[in-house]
Length: 60
Image 1 (tube, rainbow, N blue to C red):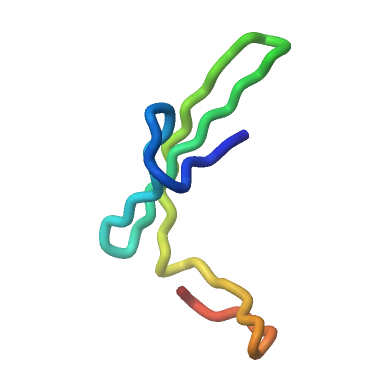
Image 2 (cartoon, helix red, strand yellow):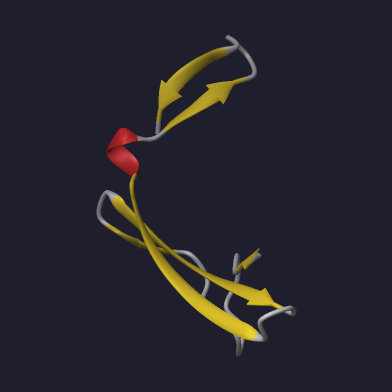
């Protein structure tokens, strides 16, 4: 599985629309010879990250 961080001919980079981040991924399976393109929406108001300085979760 690969996710596009920057724009390329194959995948669009991460896009932000207000409190939503849009990511594009590609999933390739050699065994079944299938390719899936995935567009995901991430609600940033619900996401957290662990801060190194406090070692606690904080909202984005």
